[in-house]
Image (cartoon, rainbow, N blue to C red; front, top):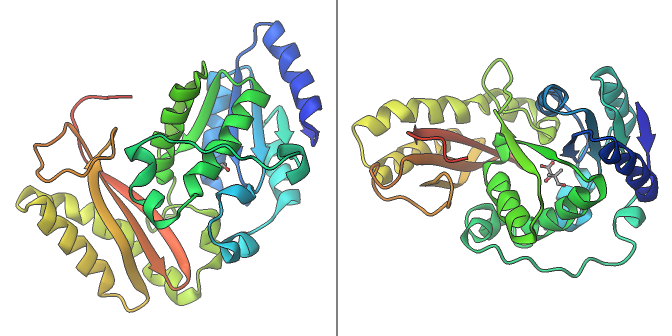
Length: 286
Ligand code: PAF
């Protein structure tokens, strides 16, 4: 595995690969790697000839400086994991390499960017679009891999890639969970033991809500999920939105769309956990 810190070195390697007709799979990460990231690598290895994993804690997508300050940083362990996982290139740039000048670009992608996380974390998706568009361009990726835990992020990245005319395939991969159901996340290490004990109730409640939804309206289901999770003193639901899985427009009845997803954010103590559940997917719209 090659470890690359400079953008120019990455450009040289990927240009060579593209010239040789190779496909390039990009897995963008912010480090603190866990099995969720490795599942993306595995899929990229199956699909493509050259796998590039970026490890870059992107400051422009953090609307909360405390979150950036406390985000786990484990670069050495990350690089060792990537080597073991059979990655071809680990791209580990500095902030100066990624942003030689401040990135002033403002993306307007409409509803997918404004709702849910867009509303709660102003500027977050703009920063994601800044860094991901740079990574797409620098890596010359033919395929890029994202985890479905960040369900909205995938919709935003797809919209950005379409708007900017990137010719690459965006592949969404299933959420990877702990054995008790908690979605794998780099932020999980920050949970207190008490919060970690109750956090699996998020996914357990979402799963149980599929049955509940068979006999209740969308609003009743939203209220039930929210109340069930809020019954744990350590947890507080920030939002639970039931939306169309492509447009992310809210749905008001279960017949409003063929693809319906519930997206949740919960504060477990100080840690913000996000997760989602699919209520309906009649056709594959992706
Ligand atoms: O999902 C993440 O870890 C980040 O938002 C991403 C896509 C690597 C961009 O920094």
